[in-house]
Length: 314
Image 1 (cartoon, rainbow, N blue to C red):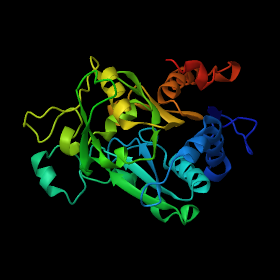
Image 2: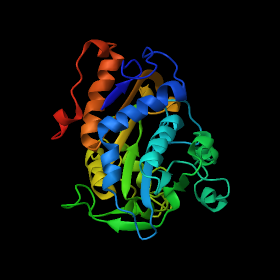
Image 3: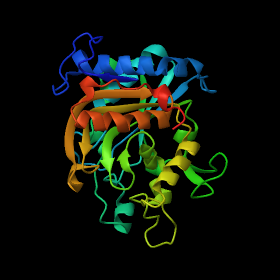
């Protein structure tokens, strides 16, 4: 599903270069996208765990503790997804999950080992911690989990790994009844773009793979990090998709990033005012690649964009 801000089915459609209001624009866009993409059916099929809760884990995209819009998943998109999930499955426990490249201020032990890693709280600066007290989410069971420090289990990819025999996967990801990849749409050097599949690099726990994920941990220990080079990254993220068990993807393409994945690396924010969603993570990425190219060319309004089903075998 692809929904742009000028979709005539929206209650208040606006041009694709317009700054968006949450209640007027973003919430209706996200709701329409996830409804058309099939999230309601995914949630309906989920069975509660022993605690009576349906664990819905949203793996967002936060790289560093400091950023600009386009670097990270817009908190407003996350909020809109959570409002929809809470309405459709009131028994859901909602989790914002990420394993970014920063140390919390209290982890002085880790900073002593690798002082070049920034200190901060990416969940706070990205706006996610404010959701814990957001009145629009009152009554929702909401938490934030830093995957860098989560209990990790070694898991073999189905059919065998393309790069490694097994991967360390956080308990939060493994226990998810519904796993959602919720990235921002960006350019990246190694594989061209980072959307719903590449977003899964962030599930690798830092205490196993390091800060960043390709460095290994502890520093200079010889423990390997995640293979994160152009030569193998396609295969690595395919393996991670196998062990993560993603059930749904929502792509924040309201403001993405071209030229590079973050502003500090030369990335330039670009507004396309789109939200993409679907229950096939690879199909969503295939459509995101086409949608991004067409939006950047400013020809999207004159073209017929195929649905996710057209890419189900990609």
